[in-house]
Each structure stands twice: as C-alpha cells, then as structure tokens.
Length: 270
Length: 198
Image 1 (cartoon, rainbow over the protein chains, first blue to last red):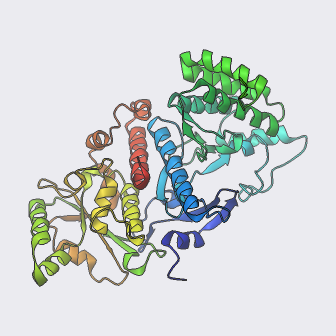
Image 2 (cartoon, chains in turn brown, orange; image 1 turned 90 degrees about the horizontal axis):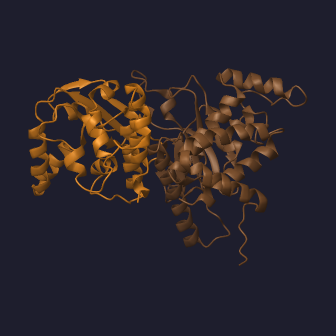
Image 3 (cartoon, each protein chain N blue to C red; image 1 turned 30 degrees about the vertical axis):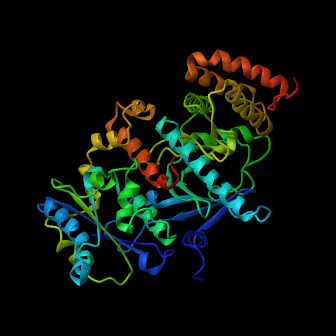
C-alpha cells in the first residue's frame, strides 16, 4: 500500500465493485467494523453503496476536480432535500468531495426494471436470484417476483406515481427517471416495503412545469422502451401522480401533451 | 466502551473508541477543566490536555450509533485530508454534528447540566487502557451504546434540525417509531453531507 494513496481510495480497494458507468463506478462496502463482537451493531446499518466519480483523463485536472466536487455536492443536496420532503431516497452516509465519493445507504431490494421483467441491467442484480427468465412465460414469472414483495403491478405503479409527485412537489427534478432508477425495498428490511428513487446524479431544483413534464416524459419513454405493453402501466403511474400533485396536475398534464408531440428538447426557433 | 476500526485510515486515526456514560455527576467540572486546560502553558498544560483528549458529546442530541459514527467518520476523513475546519479531530466531530455553523460546542459539547455523555477517542490501534483514561475523567455509569435512542431528546433534535414543518415528519407524525426512523435518517444524512452543504 502506497503512502500517497488517499484513505478513500484505499477504502475503494477494499470494497466490491458492482457496476461501472461512464461517469462513476459503484461499490458495495462496510464501514464501522467493531473490534469486539460482544455488542453487535445493526448489520444493515454498516453496509454502504459507494459512488465514485473517478478522475476523467480527458479533462483538465483542475476543471475535473471542481466539476466532480460540485456534482457530488449537488447529488447530496438533492438527496437531503428529498429526505426532508418525505420522498423515499437512500440516506447519505459519507461524502468525500475531494476524491469524488458519495456513500449512501444500501437498499436491500430489486430495481423496478427487474421486477417488471425488463431484465437485469447488464451487470446489476443477477447475483442473488440467478438469471431473469425470458420468453412467453415472462408475465407469470414477473408476478412471482412481485409476489415476494407482496405487491401487485398496479400497486407498484401507484407507488411510483406517488413518489414522483412528492419529489416534484418539493421542486426537485430527477433528470433521469427510468425503471432502473427505482428500487423496491424488501418488506423484511427495517424501513419496510418502500419504493425508493435512486441516482440523483442529474437532479436539479426547478419550479417549472416544463421541467416536471419532461421528467415524466423521460420516464414514459423508458417504460415503452424496456417494458412491453407499457401504456396501462404508465397510465397507473400518472393516475397516482395526478392525485399527489393536486391542483398542479392541470398545467403539468397539458405540458406533457406538448412534450409528447415535440420530444424532450424544446425548439430554440423563434 | 466499544471500539471500531477503519483500516484504510492512517494508523494514528484508524481506531475509534466510543463510550456512553449515564448518571454523570461531574459535567460542570469536566467543562471547566477543558476550558482551563486550553489556557494552561508549558508541560502541565500538555499533560492536562492529553488527559482530556476526547470528544465529549451531549448524548441527548444523538439519535443512533450510526448518527454518531457518521460524524466521527467525516471528522477523521477531514483530518486525514488535512482539511479540518476546527483545531482537533475531536472538536471536528462536534462541528459535523451541528446542522448550522455556530454554537456547535455549546450545543453538542458537554454542558454543566449534562447527565448523559458520549466520550470519543480517536487513536492508533495500540493506545492502551482507553476505558481507564475515560473513567478517570467522567464520573458516571458506563452504559451500552444500544441505549442511545432511549436517551435521545427527540424534541430538541427536531428543533435544532428545523424538522417540525417538514413534509417528511408530517407524513410520519402518527407513528412514533416511524417518526424516529425518519428523524434519524435526515439527521444522519445531514451530518454526512455537512462538508458540502450550502
């Protein structure tokens, strides 16, 4: 072990890498190891997910450092805002802005994408439950997956709409709503069954109807591209969302119609 | 007393000793001793400062072991990166616990009337007899850290963190257990992100 390596990088070396994207690597780790086993602490509390926004070689070092730092800070602020607003999101466990590491609560559960039979996203899940079954009997298998959590597909859609509504009521825009960025917390965990929104790496604050409508539109597209016959599913999401945002629904739904016609990007003409 | 190990930190910061004392009778003494020690010059000052080289935390403001560990972790991390905002790693724990930017020692440190104290010592793995060092300063009953949530003054925690008007608490208001889970989560997360807040 070299002396120059920072403490957080050494922590990463001792952690299990579970996924890698273009922006960050994801690890699973444990902190706060007790020396004696006499008084055992709650084990679930010690498991963490680490998100490492690694150094990008293609950026100037000082620009890279300041971008990384502000993105870690931004993600942490979005999470705390959601927590205070009662949106189910992972709690924050450690922040090392210098190294670009965000440690968050480990969610014991499965992604909605997986539960709806959209398959594991290349490298996630699989570990525990083996391969996702494919073929005609998909539907029956999905029902079994959901049965373990004690929820119907309709109830799950309802939970999704409710959570997004709470988030939008707090003027937080997720920026990357997909079924992979939602997890169902296992009913046996201390906090019980919950739909948890994850990955706030692209989140930002906005009161604009446009931003909320686009957030919904992105999710609608994600549903239709990953899950067959998604229309009734997404309708269920919107129904719960409508209830959650109350009087704001009229403006948002009208704007959602517009966005569907033109797509996510607004025309800059005129 | 419980000891936790952080092997990825430099040796002199890799071991954390935590103890909870109940029915503490000498809080006022401890507080004045700390103040006096900070002003003492020469070798006597060093000896006294070494004897008091702990973080003393008012246990009523701590929600859970995880809450405490998170503050300790962020303090040790700051020390390892040479980016302490306070003078010592022990005072940095109090800084991390405080959701605002003033009065962290007055609120989270030892007050004259405190009867439950958490004592923390960050050290190398080979510091001997830490519990002995703690009990020679604090007169009280050494207790299990599992008792922490029972000591917590949830009303004051909510006030200091300005949680009373938050939607998260309103949603959980009917169920005390649920509300405490929510408060603990917000408070722990606030501590974890203190270094990048605002």
